[in-house]
Length: 113
Length: 110
Image (cartoon, rainbow over the protein chains, first blue to last red):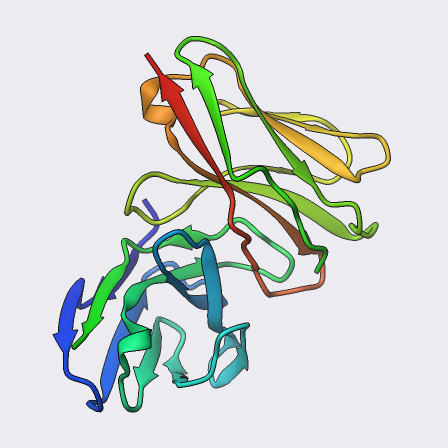
């Protein structure tokens, strides 16, 4: 399995609090992605990164920010969590441009109460 | 990136071939077709990809029509462990976004 670790795996937080999810990889892959998945829905892209300090928005980026200060870490931050952000969050990595063969983490289940 | 369309659900008998269709009628010449699957609550797993030729690996076969507007993922001898959501996505060779749709829920029945 690709070396990709998400932390925490589960988190319950209160509305209005900041939350940071971490994705750590040991593969030295260039691209990193954050997705959310809600019941009955597929994966929706939140943000992605194509290098250190290089990030771009996905289709559901509102309410989320990201940072990538090192190749191996991609952080997803919910500045002020809302109940609509209750979801399962997946991180993925890919090693080169145009390569759709991505490796996914095991997911983080976030509940905002 | 081109959009894909897949049936929301399909059933297959154990031991039979599962043929999962995907429509990508707006695909352009520099876009590959990729297939993933997601077994309940796990992260998606890459299966196979292709540009215009048919492809086969240890997991599945991918058949792409000559006009490249559709493709079919074939699991030759489906098992209960193949029950999952299968995603077909299109990726531009110079692109970096990986955009998933809703996928097809394949249920393999005993």
